[in-house]
Image (cartoon, rainbow, N blue to C red; front, side, top):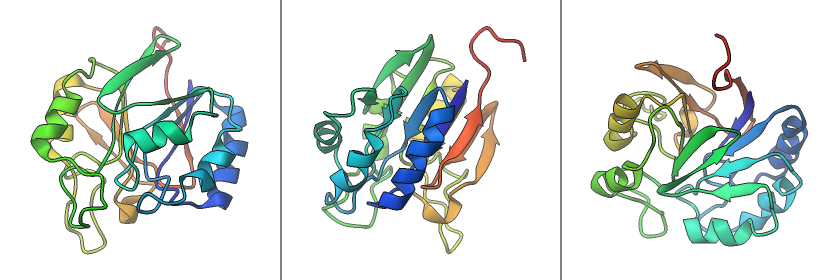
Length: 206
């Protein structure tokens, strides 16, 4: 199963156009938030991404709310927006939680959640699902340009408890494209260029 993962487009139409091309050769597309800038420009990228006909799982970033993202993707028929809920595609479970976790220093415009709120949103995540979050688990792919860790303890606790098959996140731009292993789980900070992950299908050998 090939999965195209991306995050943090921030209204970049050229990046969105490239993702449409990359999606032709994958089975599922995952977008880990921040399509907009401070709640503006959602349609800049989503009007392009809606050309993708493969199943797509999206979560909001801290730059757009879940409701805004659902409204903006009404014409993207193959896309599902998750935030504190899940879906299933070809016998694979997905769980999604968006927003900045923990609360960011960016102010009132940022769509943020504290660790307690995040824990509640993550609580229904099934074992061995694919977890899509905007914010990374703490001390993984969450090192900002000064080296400070900016991720979420609640997300890390969920990874350790539920052993997701894959975690796709974004949010921390200086760690775009990087991946680490936490327990048995690969954590990918996807970034806007698009990264294809080849994940064994359920029941497949290897």
